[in-house]
Image 1 (cartoon, rainbow, N blue to C red):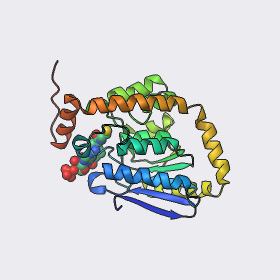
Image 2 (cartoon, rainbow, N blue to C red):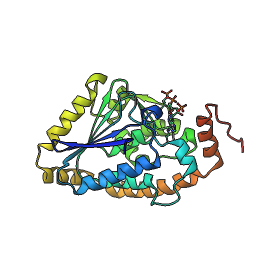
Image 3 (cartoon, rainbow, N blue to C red):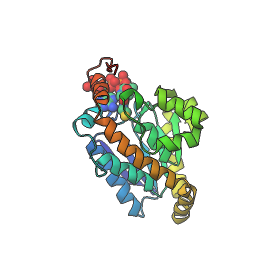
Image 4 (tube, protein in one colour):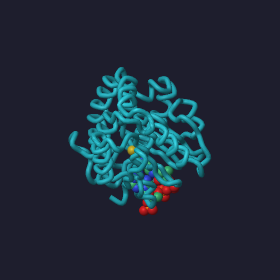
Amino acid sequence: MEQVRIEQSDGVLRIELNRPEKKNAITLAMYQALADALGSAQSDARGRVVLVHGQPEAFTAGNDLRDFLANPPRDESHPVFLFLRALRDFDKPIVAAVSGPAVGIGTTMLLHCDLVYAASDARFALPFVNLALCPEAGSSYLLARLAGYPRAAELLLLGEPFSAERALEIGLVNAIVPPAQLLDTAAAMARRLAQKPPDSLRVTKSLMRRALMPGIEQAMAAENLAFRERLGSAEAKEAMSAFLEKRPPQFSKG
Ligand code: COA
């Protein structure tokens, strides 16, 4: 699929989000392609490490809001949930290279990556409340564990964009690099990981995530239910339509 490019070399499966004209907003078809790519990579011994990235201008603007309005997830078989489960359960290392906007799932998916490199121009955001939605990808649990409750609350309740420096400070990213060096840096780290004994990497990652898994699973189950309910709400429809119509949202006072 052109909007999700997959390339395999040197033990690294590279996944590139490639829809720059929409800032790499992720459609249902792209979620399906991402879920399929992770599913195949899980059992393909050639890919020892996954590297995920966008373009210099954008990592991803998150869920495609037009697609979400037209095809909201009704059950767990929706491609967004398939992708989130594939990401959660993936047991090989994932390296992410983030530049430009990383909105919504563009930030929450990083909580499931192992090494994250941010360009100095990366701009993160968790605008779920501003869209009248709620957190996803286990972020209601993982972010508070990572950053501490007050900082997670600030990011999730206010939903304001934050810088690469802030992301580094809360432990969301490993390092900030100049934009021109981002992809080379992340790719070099992915190749380094791909030289390591693959079974040992998988066992190590699984052991590190073992204690977190019950919390992630519980959070994701509750979030998925709430997210579906929120997407069907009048306030979410208004918030998303307002974005697409380039106007401020009008929420009812009730
Ligand atoms: N869903 C659907 N379309 C989106 C999108 C999204 N999440 N994000 C961006 N786009 C579209 C815009 O509508 C615009 O389309 P147009 O050229 O047909 O008008 C195009 O992508 C470029 O976006 P634009 O807003 O002009 O780029 P920008 O550089 O000014 O801002 C963002 C980039 C990411 C900050 C901004 O697009 C944004 O806030 N997007 C919404 C993010 C969001 O709320 N995601 C959902 C999280 S659950």
